[in-house]
Length: 218
Image (cartoon, rainbow, N blue to C red; front, side, top):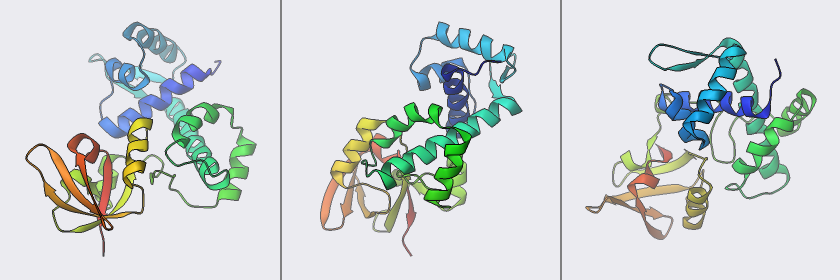
């Protein structure tokens, strides 16, 4: 089997979509990778041939043990590249995801081990995310979406969805970053959220507030 960058992208997308959304079908992959349905169908045939995925009668796609091993390796390398770019090279936190998407395929096992040795045991990326953690896992850790946070209760921004560069830049401009403390003032009638960040008041739409995970401040 020849493992191409395209195949790596597909198995990683399946793993990430499965963790975030649950059931994965062809349309899910098309949306995640922004490719056409015929392109997904062709890719799935190749992945099934290489025994990296299975597709049941309802069209539900699952990774085989070999496919999941490849996806887990890529997700680790993506995570390490993000940390390298931010912690060692000083690249802004909202830029590193897109860079890591390109560089993760070039990381060898030797470079991976060296990055682990240099960066240490921390398992959070610049967006606050841990490797392979699903929304269900975050809730078990006591987190909730910013949109769900009760008014008047201080919270800490723990992590956020990282695949939308424009959204991350928007958050950065508002001061919404991992580690920042905030207080929800009110859910407004127009579907926005009034927040206080330090001494600053901001208004955030529901769609954006559902991309940020927070936990109560002790």
